[in-house]
Image (cartoon, rainbow over all chains, first blue to last red; front, side, top):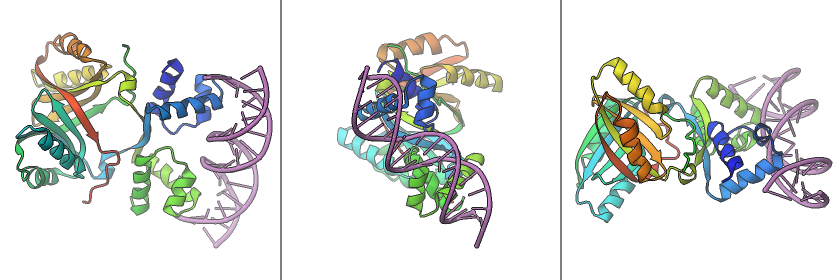
Length: 152
Length: 152
DNA sequence: AATGAAATGTCTTGGTC
DNA sequence: GACCAAGACATTTCATT
């Protein structure tokens, strides 16, 4: 990860569909050099994929929430099973397994508040290991589009 | 948003760098048709951008946490000011403004636990409007790579 | 709206420094 | 590693249906 690699990563985070030529022009290197760098970054697992960012409303997920979930007992097998269960639910965008706390946090996206309520009562509350949850509707989310590499 | 649009969105979520030709072949339409659809989706704001997914360790953010923050007073101006402040911090990947609750949740990524501690004490605790926060280190995060469109 | 075909531009390889 | 050049391939425009 020299500075050229870091720059490539930054530019592809901002716009994953720019051509290899454009990338090379911006960086002041030959296209073939740039291409080989990108391949190497991909081989090494630094670049994990390329994804289109889609408007949440178009995905019918205009209502989003964070749901902090408590489960018991906190054994490895119960934690793993709940993690798998939650991650497979279509409403769940992201599952955070938290150490230190006793909790999961689920980032949920649904069409409307009705569907949020249905999710909580029909999906979550029915699991025997779930002993409680707190739901916070997301009023606004500000996403950092291009997380920079932090200095050591 | 007919079915062809939905399919395009789904495929570009999974792989934003596939060529327009490949997209068209998969969908069974002409490349020019496919291109025009993608442009229309972009014009309408359905496709908001294309981003490379980068390994968190390579960005020096091997340690991540969710920080639930309480602020007072809960006036519009104080909320907006804190939202702007938090979102501009390099350690903050995402800022959730929560209605219903009285809280923000910050998704934070830092190189190590020392830097997490520094962030909490030097950045957050120094703000006068911050009356408290709870930090949960993220043990694991399972991200849904391709959030499907939910039925109405 | 969708298509085919042509011009324009890009990707990618292999040889060279 | 980085670069150049050239053939293979993709993008994009536009006239047509």
